[in-house]
Amino acid sequence: MKPHAVMFHHFHDESKHPKVQGSISAERLDNMIQFLQANKVILSANEWLYKALQDKLKENEICLSFDDNLRCQFDIAYPILKKYNLKVFWFVYTSPLEGKLERLEIYRYFRTVYFENIDDFYHVFFDYIEESDYKFRVSKALEGFIPQNYLSDFSFYTDNDRTFRYIRDQILGPDDYRFLMDAMLKDYKVDLKSLRKKLWISKENIKELHNKGHMIGLHTHTHPTSIASLDINKQTNEYQINMKLLSEILGDYPVVMSHPCNSYNKNTIKLLKELKIKLGFRSNMKNNLNSMYEFPREDHANIIREMEQKS
Ligand SMILES: [Zn+2]
Image (tube, rainbow, N blue to C red; front, side):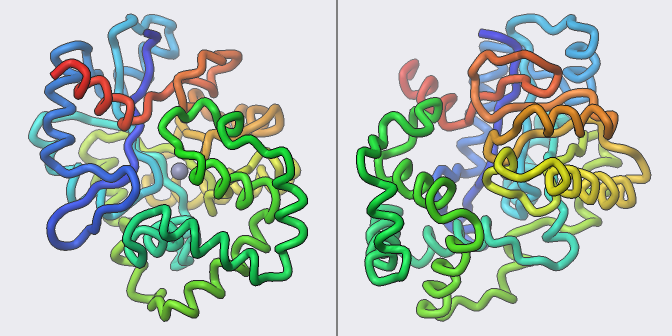
């Protein structure tokens, strides 16, 4: 296996942070770090970057990365990282720091907290489409759609996961998806304002991580689910604002990044070079290392599988 990062998103506990799709507990993370340390060498983010730039990484050398500046990571995972003295990558999208309630996370919270399970949400979502003006467009676009062939790199997705993502990203697009979801949130009486502090970390938290030797990287400003479908100006805007806000917080320019939802194209790579980013991460283990902006990452869900197979 090539040198790579392990990618983390959500964590849950007994009190503040509910279980969401794919979330893990502090104990699970603790076990996972022990499992990884038994089999591989976990480098600090700094060291991993340094070696990657010199092309000196060994096969068994990995690093850890946390995407999306989530409060649950700071509350639950950060204490475990301290315990093992691990310094990791944190890829931060900046709009929540400006007080914007980014829908991506709000919707994730909604669909996992307000429903018994994710399939219940999917059923209601598919029903909403049936009742909406998008009905015809969606059913036409789904003709001949084979879920297994979509996002096939992400082996742990179910058919419903794939169909949902296909409708969201390829058929509806951001504006219509948002319109539909916001209608649902209204029907379910979700209190949006209370969610900001619950879901994301603050500027102070980011500063603390930076001061403790963790490495903060870019992850766009508003976290589009498919940045590759945006024109170069919009893409540039996403990363420029992200760079500006983070460098103001850190007093330093970030030199690393990860691609939200693994989405990027030639324009993205061009603009990252212009922003003097040195290294970027994908969101899967596909070996497409055509540039310094496509280092592979293993989803933590796949590590859990490996642990279960070996135990
Ligand atoms: Zn992300």
